Every structure is written in structure tokens, then in C-alpha cells.
Image (spheres, rainbow, N blue to C red):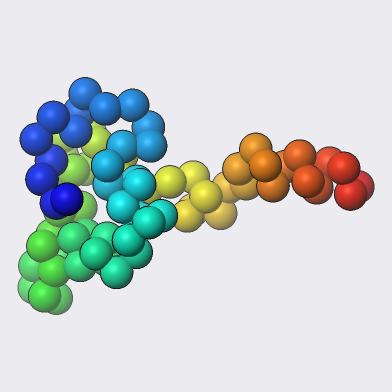
Length: 73
């Protein structure tokens, strides 16, 4: 689950983005810095350019939410 081997070949959502949605506690442990008791994976993923957050987690609507609001509005 925490291995990044081959993650650069995956389309989005990649394994880390899916982990954020399906296993949030594991994701927190994985991305938390080493000095705070985590695995510190955010640093190497940033370095090699693998996205590990989803647009929804940063406040962006997904298509389903957008369509629902368009119907209501």
C-alpha cells in the first residue's frame, strides 16, 4: 500500500489518491513527516512529481456535485 514503485506510470487517481479516499488514517500515517511519527512519503512524492492529493480534498467539486448543484440552481 505504501510502495511508490511504478506509481509514476499510473493515471489519476493513483494509488496514493485512492488511499486518501478509501483509507484516510493510513494515508495520514503515510504522508506525515518522519519527525512526527509518519512515513514521510510526501517529500519523495513531491520530488519525483507524483500527485498524492485529490482535487476534492483541496476543495474542488467533483462532476457529480457540480451536476447536482446545476440541477438545483
